[in-house]
Image (cartoon, rainbow, N blue to C red; front, side, top):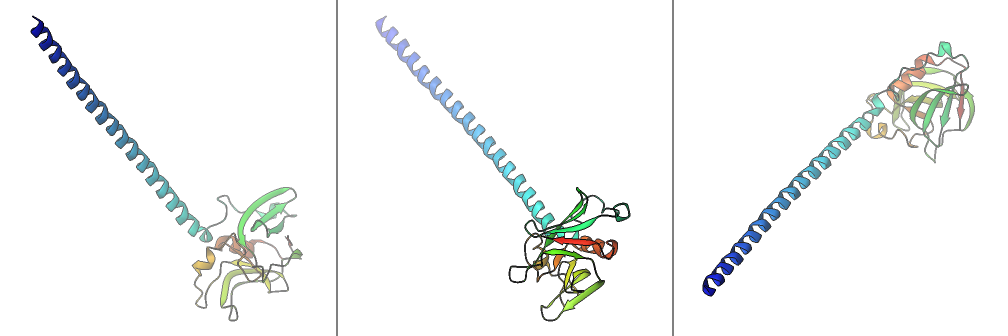
Length: 204
């Protein structure tokens, strides 16, 4: 009888050990499955972030080809007192009427060695394109605001063949010109075609 009890106890103990082992394996597998799922989810999130970043970067690389804002350019016929403000600190050009900013453009003003002059000026002459053999740069849609053709609003730079220099085009938003104010192609074209002669230009 005692032997039977010992045998039963031994069997129960063995079954208990096996049960614990099975439960441990189950829990371990379950944890592994959760860990794998978590890792896969993390990888998916990281992949989506990477794709979004790449898409944003691609979009930024093409910003010089598009208007700075998604809204329409202002109708200056309805804003007789509008003027242009150039912010060197923010590298932006603003079309302003009174206290209202009608439009904001991303820009690139002069480098420290050839800064864009500060002060109050007025729109002067304009033209379709130019090329400077000394600086080996040109641009399209130029509009002068000082010294009659010296300091201009114009598109991102072009080479001697009239092709846009993308390495320079990507510098919008930083001081990178020889003193002029670089703009996206559509922004420069709009100023060239829509801003009237004599309009005030404030550079600060």
